[in-house]
Length: 419
Image 1 (cartoon, rainbow, N blue to C red):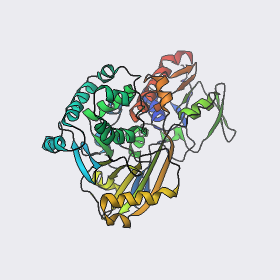
Image 2 (image 1 turned 45 degrees about the horizontal axis):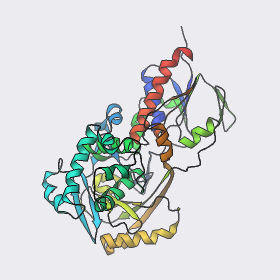
Image 3 (image 1 turned 180 degrees about the vertical axis):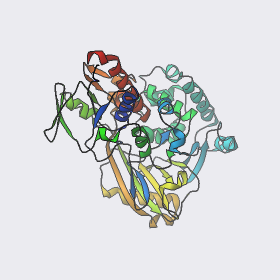
Image 4 (image 1 turned 45 degrees about the vertical axis):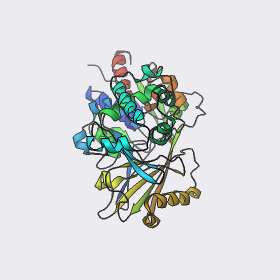
């Protein structure tokens, strides 16, 4: 009777959990190591004074294909944002909606000053091409940047600056819109065929659901890995764990260090967001609000308790604000500027909002240079017995993390006789 090889997964983020779950479903056990005190990696939710605060403002796209295949959406109780946005421009909010889902908003969208009528018709073409995986081809190839793709489609400068740059800049944490067109196509397709949503109990519910099929005894938290020594994993404590296969399910920099390679100097894309407690919602409805003026520190804002009431205690509202310039240093100096802009947007009520927390997430998304090398295609096998997975191995998205975790498990299963 053969003995199943010992598999060690370093990292209990979404990629590592997806890899472990796929292995367990095929009858293989593994040990998951993580330096943190909880699973989820960058997809976690904390409870603070009765509020649910995700680690940095995040949203979930229900149209992601891998997520659709591996997650139970009904159990997550997804709460959808409005299919569109409120764009702050010239002193007021302008409603922009997806006419396929909100035909009642079609006239208001067509008449808004956020782009020309031709721009709005071109958005429909962009949607169709993304759904049929023709967007990159029409834009000149996957290596083109998102900005070059928008220019190839003929969007006006006004549409680019008032809508696409603040919206996609927040999605990709990239105000330059240099994200590869292949990634833009995947994300825009997900926007077009699904909802922008939040799990009712916070983004951390996604990690918890993935872990439901994994025995708790196989996940070791606060277990920092110092180095690899051949097929042995050496913990910071000095403990040595022998294995037949190791999966690096960490961020790109940590994976490079554990492989014994130079750590990339590109710091990746940072996320900067703030949470506020308010007595009442300044805007009713599950809206994403984006800064179309290009002025001030705010990039996007949302009343999360209007999306999912569970995010705030009864009688309170939770406002999330993301900064437009994510490269800004983590400093309290810009908090007054955020408050001034909130007052400009919502009036004097914003003066009374209580600042709950500021989240500065380094390496919230991998460097674009890494994505350009990967070109959206993960290669999980590094060498015999060593594999890697993570969002940087695919599209840099949550869906890419899930997919790369599964692909790493499949690579191990294909190599099992050699382990």
